Image 1 (cartoon, rainbow, N blue to C red):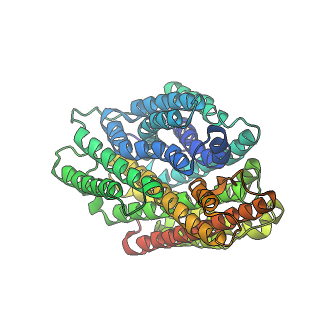
Image 2: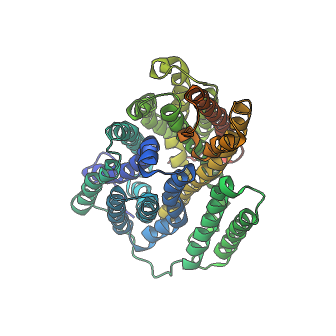
Image 3: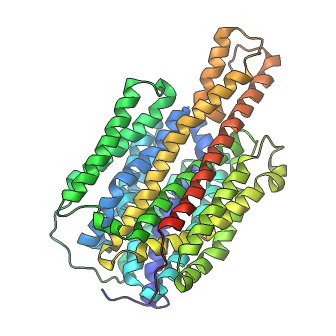
Length: 511
């Protein structure tokens, strides 16, 4: 397919449309973490409810994003991209009007369907339309620009949440999405491949969707029913069985949604393993950092958003530069150093205890966020370039879909598993913190039962005023204990991601 220069008018409009659509999806994710405390309070959501609000979108996205990429490759990338944007806008509007947790979860599913069609199209358009020599630079530009807009999400979300307007974080997608559609319709000239008459892999799509749903349900139910429960075993067992069935279906299918031949390329396989481990650590770490800042450390939601500003500045300064270097020297070295550095940043953050609030930020959270941001800044563009460069142009949409699916699957499992583990760690520590409290056993059980709400745990109303402060302190200490363990697990995942690059990623010679 004919390609264009990054500096040409066509190249610039393709970049603008891809950045706008990607930013719309990513803003939604980052801002949502910041508004969770306000959302939880307003909708009376439990800790489990919060994780379902996060995971309903990620689950649908992970389940359908592979077929979204395949649809783009077969029916036209621009066409499928635009349909995805329109669906995402509709889902966002519905989320903004959701009356309770149940309907918010349902409407987040609709957002996920739109995202599954939209997100692979973004990088696929860049990869198939921009000259190969400039592809790394283009991806670096995309990474930097989307990250700048994306990390504006926490600032916007924090400001809106503090003003009691958290619902508007969904409505902000409307002007961004409409602008992306207008640019694509009138300005972005894309030469589409001839539509294919190959049938869609519906059985494969249903199988992977059911597999992820069963696994996520199993992990999310652990805090309520425990690990040693027939429902837990049944759900997790069914999920694993369906995952194996999906691989078999793809192996046998004449027209698979996830061609297994792509994984014969060692760099493609290694980059996707790296993506899974890194983004699992990133998702878990950022979620619990946001909850910690607002619910335990006393930050307002706007202040919580501002804490990520160093991350934004680093991405602006470094991402495009890293993409250029990856074009020149290959991505391997960056994919070793970057995730390892990000892992070290998460480890530093795990040692932060109870602080004096925002005034202590520079000597508590700032060093870890700085190191973590530096690591991610040197990772994002080289990682994307490695994935897209290791697949043929014909499979660019599918390759982008697979890598994005890895990101979303990682987030689903991070939220589900870390959510279950956090409640477990919180409960155990809370039982220890409250064992000497001078309250009757029934009241103590009520106190411990609040563990399911994590940082939003509430002191029972029948407790004497003198003991309320002590119980609140126990809640905070228990949350910080759980937070520290989750952050260390997240750090370990970052280091494992770097090890995947050592083992599998090879430098791609850029012609």
